[in-house]
Image 1: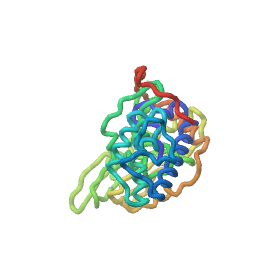
Image 2: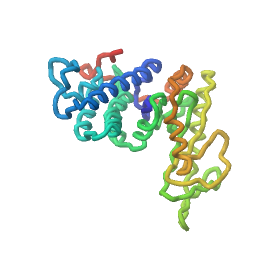
Image 3: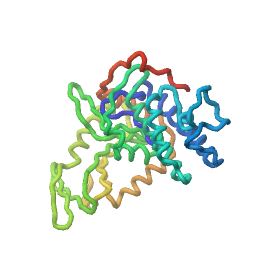
Image 4: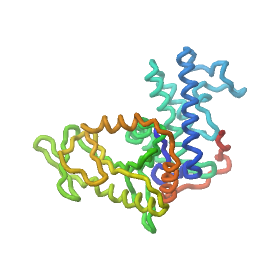
Length: 305
């Protein structure tokens, strides 16, 4: 499950300490999954009743799914995950894993919109954004995701593409919306043609936004003297790309390349790297953040280590 370190211009816990939260998330996720799987395999998961006696809870009885995922400071995210979990009861280990990942999404959004002292106001659309869920659920824990970030370069603010920060490099990813069965033809630097049968339609070249994102990334890497490779990706699993020479440091991922591209990411077993975290920290420093101070009754206790 990729980690959402930046969502649009919302404040993020990762901005506070990039060297703490990624490892902490991985640990919490693995520990809770181990507990849930163990209870499931023992046939001891009761989705309507309290946590089994073997798991310690506070005197006030709480449902198992809330206790299992409970982490200081999760607040409403815990309630949201709990209601989601009651509605989707798994019937196999595979379904249990998906069920678990779905339950983690509110926690991801919580970390991507709050710190202990400040908060941003999440747009409801992100809760059901299939593209965001795809990135978070289909990639390993060691991938750090910046989703629709707003970059700041000098006095300018730029809406840029998604950035996947892996252990060995960056991927700047833009999506090309298309209908199933269409073929993409590169016509010029500014225009592409999408064709299905005899029907053609022009779209703006996705390379335009990728170049804007590349400008931002290159300037940050240069500013902090960081050598970290990057690749620009045009992602569109619904269509196929006409055989053409891809620009330098750019790949087109259509229906013929999608499975291999995703498989390579999912097979990544490399742990988090220092240079990866350093790069992520530098990029976050130059993204816009809009947040307000949390009310006194809305503050949280520090996360447990």
